[in-house]
Length: 305
Image (cartoon, rainbow, N blue to C red; front, side, top):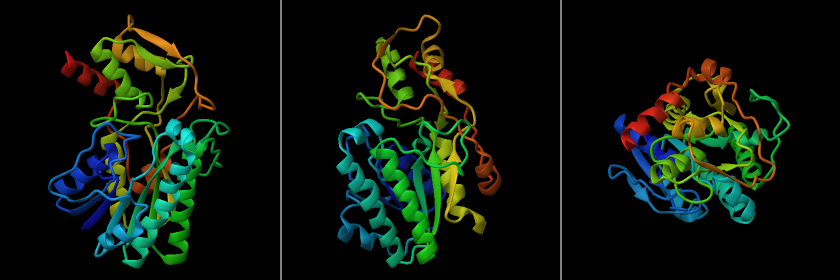
C-alpha cells in the first residue's frame, strides 16, 4: 500500500510513519515543522519526505498521485496556542484539511483517516462520552477540528472518498512534547520530575483525563485504514481507554506521595472530567487499547533512575 502521512514528522504522525514502513508500505510524509506544538521532529529516512505546508495546495497536490490511503494529522493541535492565534488555527485546520481532501479527490485516493479530538465534547456532555453526543466546542481548536470532521463527512457523501474520523483522548508516549508552557501534561511532568523541579498543576488538579498511549492510537489508525467494513465510512470513533485519572493521580504516579508540585492558574473553560466510551471502536474497528498508564510510567521512571 502507498500511504501519505500529513504531520508525519510530529509526535503521533512519526509513530504512524514508522509503523507503516515497518509493515512494508511505501510512505510519503508532509510536515512543515510547525513549532507551536512540538519541540522535536522525527523524519524517517526510509520515507519520501517533504517539508511542505498543507495550506500550499499547489505543492502538496502532486504528492497524492497513486496514493491508496492518507493519514491526516497535520494541524495546529494545542488548545492554548489556538486561543492565542485563532486565525492560524482556522487556516491550517480547516483550509489545510480541505486542501488535503481535495488533493485526495482529484488523485483518486481511496481512503482518508482523519485525526480529530475529544475536545469536541466540551463541558455539556457527561462522561463517558459517546460519538452520538452533540459537540460543544469551546475554542478555535475544537471548532476547527470539528469543521474538519464535517468536511470529511461531506467528501465521503458527495465524492465517495472513504473517510474515517478518530477522536483522540490525551495521547502520551514516545516522542511526546516535553517542553514549553503547553506541553501535554505527562511529558511535562516527567521532564520536571527528571530535572528535580516541582510539577506544575493547573488549577486544583482534580481534572480527570483519559490518557491513551500513542501505540494504541497508531493501531487504531492502522485498523481504520485496513477495515473492509463499509459501516465505518464517514463515521466517528473515540480512541481512548475508557478509564481516567486526575492530574493529582499523575503527580503521585510520577513523584510518589512526597512529590513536589505547585499550582498555576486554571485555564478558561477547561473540561473537568473526560473519559471515552470506546464500544463503537471495539465493535466496528475491532480495536482495543493495550498499554496501561501506570505500567508505562513505572517503566519510564526505571529508565530515568
